Length: 244
Image 1 (cartoon, helix red, strand yellow):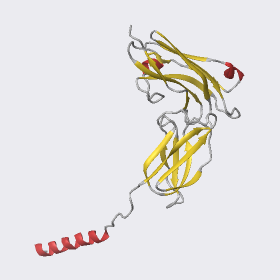
Image 2: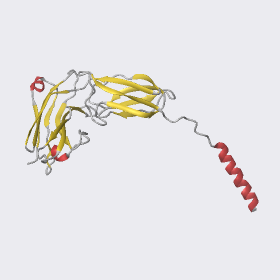
Image 3: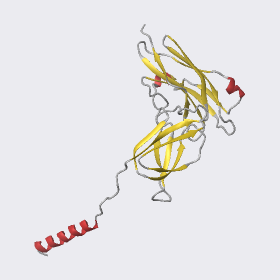
Image 4: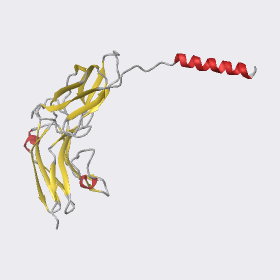
């Protein structure tokens, strides 16, 4: 086969490949879906952390068995996705420290806002703190909006960080691990199901070793032994440690 015939076959191959190529005519995702996780007890945004809860979406417009798509919660209990395809979605709050809830079907197009009310497993109440030199003492009580079927309560953790983003995914480990040599944790263990003793107890967590002249952010978090082991939180407090 001479060179001219080879070139002719190559040209045909290029043309054939070009004729098989398809142009992507799908519009880019240009809708926004936003809103809040609402605490059914307080009526305010759920106290959480980044990724402390998720919205699971399934787009029903193109498939009867769509893959799930997740939008994480922000620390203030809000959520937002500014790059989502318009369409009909099944939406459900999940992977958070709250009782399972039902899904809804929602048409998302343009700027769509929806709030989702959830019932937390636990509420941290009577949250107080005192500061003495390099130590921070945080105390609280617990209440349970629903007790029937409530999973075992594990423990209350103190979380301290140098920024206001503080929680199980953002904390200074030296203040949470009380003994680096044996890995013991600075927490208030509970490890039992809900009872009258828990309801009547004031729990205390003490953090030592705060550095003079620095500002810290702290909160308490309690979790139950469910599939996700996420936390119900106290508000975040700001702690200014005076210079010596």
